[in-house]
Image (cartoon, rainbow, N blue to C red):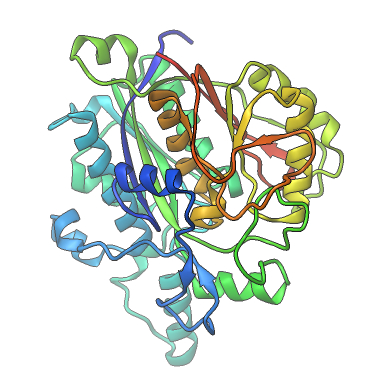
Length: 385
């Protein structure tokens, strides 16, 4: 592998609003973007909903009239990222796409199957939206991109997996530009399953709080524009950070659960995070995840890194790691660590968790640890360019 990879554009749609500025302001405020769910009847329960996106402003082709919500969030993030990178056009065959999603288009899939079971038939024009790589297809058609493309489903590390793949493609010279990120939606079926399994917080989430009782579901999309550092410098692009591809790994864990022993995770994470100024944690308020991650990070960083956990502000969802990667790049670019919303000190032992107000500091290295059930870890390392 050769060639440094630059992050030159960020496109984010989150419960804080549309655009990277709304996302960064929201995280920096320390406020929570969670509120009563309005898209479906959840009995007043909390969730992180992305504000409506005007479809015709994002999807311009005839096929785009049927675009689903996950694909629409992804496409909106792509257009925002390209604009942020100052790229009016890209070379189609030299531009790649890499997106991740834990669940894909659940809402239309559930509705399609309900109709099919009730009536024996359903609208065939909806079926293409149910295919897992629909966001990839819509983005390729709408943006005219024909280069290498990949769709990832890696649970909680889906967004990181896609970004890692995109960085590798750029570093190897397989593409000049790659749009990489992920998206997941707040869906009624998934929320009901989590609620019935007593896997959600009774109120607001409190990531890394020893008394936390669970996460709150959210949704969103983030896309990073990745290109070689040489190309970015040559065109005078603003560079948020240098993305250093790091290997994924796994540690012993139940197939659908979190590792029980933090020691193997700490040992594997240490080379990636030992010199980190900031770690953007996967912590969501889930007692099992937060306890594991806190112990592993305390051992791997020696408590020297500032920790922030964005899922306390935007909610927990499969591709939230893509938004975490955007936060890591922004921390490097601005020298600011946003606070963890919802956390009331003290945090879990051995960690320097930023709480209350953003913290200004020189950020040379920011890492997202990319933890997922089953023992998967897909870290991403952002460095000052």
